[in-house]
Length: 137
Image (cartoon, rainbow, N blue to C red; front, side, top):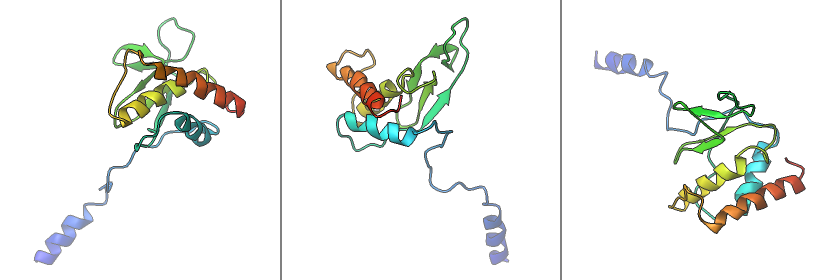
């Protein structure tokens, strides 16, 4: 009887997802290459780049796509330990792609600069220029 109960219990575990894994989202063309290039511009960090959830939310009368989150509209958001939500605006360099990856890189190094005061933010432009140079705009 005890074996039957254990088997019955185990048979109900088919929905167990196993270890928590990063969510996966639809990828833009050459996204893995773009992530690797941008991540390589930033300071070395043990953390991996976050999964990216591309959004094209409409935000009021704005003509550009945005990320609608809790009633507000953003170009992008980074959630520490989670994911980046980035408004797709037709290309990586027009979107806040490199910007949000720098937020993730900073968190991976144990600090944050939400007011963008560090000179390190100049690396975003450098990352975008590298994407253009490599033909991944």
